[in-house]
Amino acid sequence: MPENLVLLAAAILVVAFLYSCVGHAGASGYIAVMTLFGLAAPDIKVAALVLNILVASIGAWQFWRAGHFSWGLFWPFAVLAVPMAFVGGYVNLPTHVFKVLVGAVLLLSAARFLIRPTDDTVAREPSRPAAISIGAGLGLLAGLTGTGGGIFLTPLLLFNRWARAKTAAAVSALFILVNSTAGLLGNLSSTKQYPAFALVLAVAAVAGGTAGSYFGSRRFDHALIKRLLAVVLLIAGAKLILTP
Image (cartoon, rainbow, N blue to C red; front, top):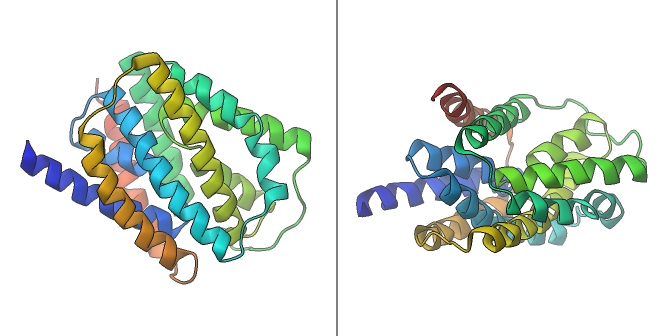
């Protein structure tokens, strides 16, 4: 219904703004919102990937302009993540499996926003074999779930003290972009379907992502934003896992 689409677009705009403030494209948030609006799992997956690509492009550009991006940290994680994201996007899981998997993704995402690292120093860089292996796994998960994988990469970089917060955000933004692009290509190769409503949501996501990434790359304390996002993700993740 048109009125539902307006409400959905407004929710997508808010999610894009909040996520892009912390260097993320918002896939898990889009999935949460579209799930609460009762959209079909295949449509949710492809729409989330499209919105992810748009917002991640903006975020990667803004964080790069602010001087936070590290190519040497990025490429080992991305080199195998991209082809594995294509494979994950090509595979369409049964609905009940999709719901449980995405529900787990949302709950993990909530945990990521609830936990705020106290130390913003770099202890060491990850070894290249470890980064390449981790990237491959995150790429596959990104394609399967319709996320970009950054929701997992960022906490890994921070908790292992492989990067500062702003650098982790910049690297994750481009990681999300390349994985989401590969995942979308894999999905379209498999389904040959694209939901028309995603065009309306794309406009809302671009507006929210542009504003959020601008302010997030230069100012804003993210503590309250992370906690508000965590509440939404907890509700949607629990709904997916507990509802038959």
